[in-house]
Image (cartoon, rainbow, N blue to C red; front, side):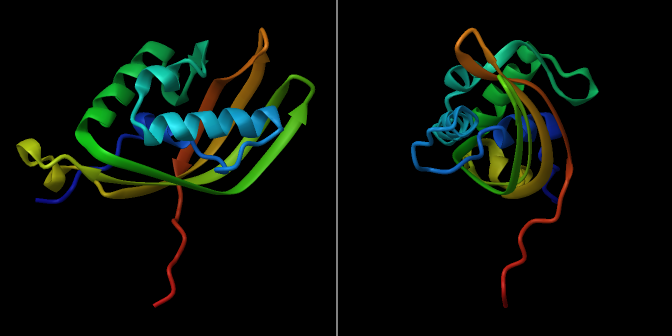
Amino acid sequence: MRPTALRPATFVLLALAAACSRAPADPVQALLGELKAAAEARDAGRFAERLAPDFRGAHGLGRSDAVAELRRTFAAYERVTIEVYGVEAERDGDSARVRCVVEFSGQARRAFGLEGLLPPSAAYRFDLDVADEGGVWRVRGASWEPAEGRQEAP
């Protein structure tokens, strides 16, 4: 049986978690670092705290649907790892547009045959709208498209 594709809405949420592992001084990098930590801990509640109340994803995906999908994804995987590269951030005062490529890898739970149905990896290119909302940087919107992952040398 061929693994199904990682749902883009789930992947957008996981991709928002991409960032450097060091504690950045820049609030955009701090936001990305917090999202990465929440995703790798598979903590949907912690992740949701960094989505704006009026968050909008591609195809009209709203915050509540995005969080629900993220909870389902986290429940299906034993381990989640995020790698980000090609980050470009354009700051404009208290907001920023962030572009990056994010690779997801994970180990599906062995229960119910999920390991044969869920993809072990995926890569997407993201365009994120982030902003300071009352002293807390949050993701207001996101769009994405499939991307080629990094090619490993033979």
